Length: 144
Image (cartoon, rainbow, N blue to C red; front, side):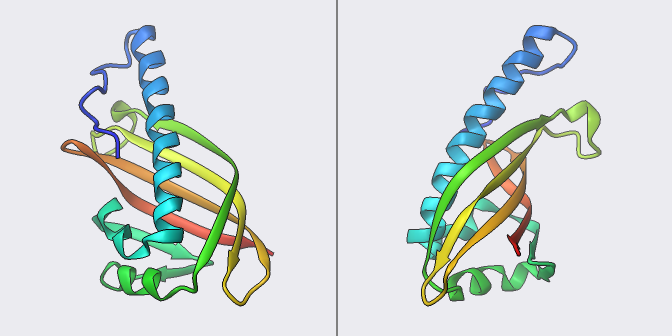
């Protein structure tokens, strides 16, 4: 996943805001590509994308962080097709953590083995940890 080292320091300069937004889009695009490939093909490797204190909400049910990997690995085999995604930077000046964060909203369709095609929505909040982006919030729900 993309390094966070190129993040500009301030939003006071309009050029910095443009650069931050551009970088967020690049990181977000890379994240969506890598995350769903991992989810569909190497689910056992998903844990590396999550911060220790991350929250997962799956169709309205909270998955405790200690159960996250077991839950994800035990899901039926899947094939996700991303229809669209949107990425927004959350500037450090405007959040309580003092870190840059990225909000990613994804929609598409998924087919789980033995089940029909379903539409889904997923929202991620990524936070910069040292030199990597990690998921701190993951909300997945089927459109029913």
